[in-house]
Image (cartoon, rainbow, N blue to C red; front, side):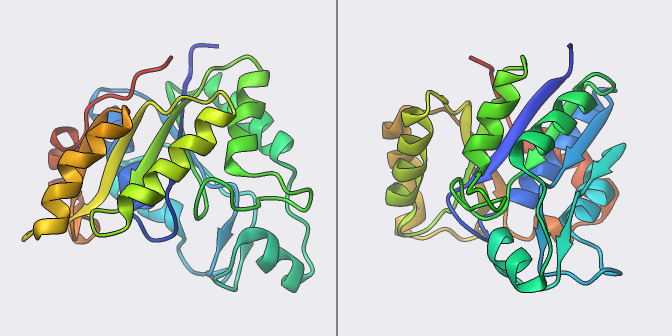
Length: 231
């Protein structure tokens, strides 16, 4: 299997995972690669509303998007599914679909929901478990952690990286999901201190990047991110 799989997780909700995923897609498509994007569970949208993958497709140009389930309430997937009376696909099934996509695409981007340990199925499977299931299927994924810029990010990032390493998942890199136009003292100090976690800082996405015109976003995205490296 020649497809490259990148799991985009984060230190929490609203740190910029979708825009980072779109930027990764834009860079890959600019290189002439065929890109698939997967969102294991989309919450907080109605049936006729665009979800996160619509943003990834519009801004990043992903060729294929896969969204197994969407749920109307803006809650953790397991909670939203339980309240809606719906069943979530098991993470093993989602992992099998991701690996299958890697056979027909150069890059498969998997955008998680919330943070690393948010439950994605009724059995308690998480983004971490999904990543391990992809590995068990014979493909070594790269894991990218999207982090916030401001106060509190050092603790949240340390916890996420520690949880990954406890599962023998070494993160390929960190990305600051929304870097303010006028960063303050905390942001400047965090930029320096994140390097002490011993995970490469691969880039910063400018705040408001998701509102750029498609052509502007795609032209700028390759400059925002370095390439994540597999183990």
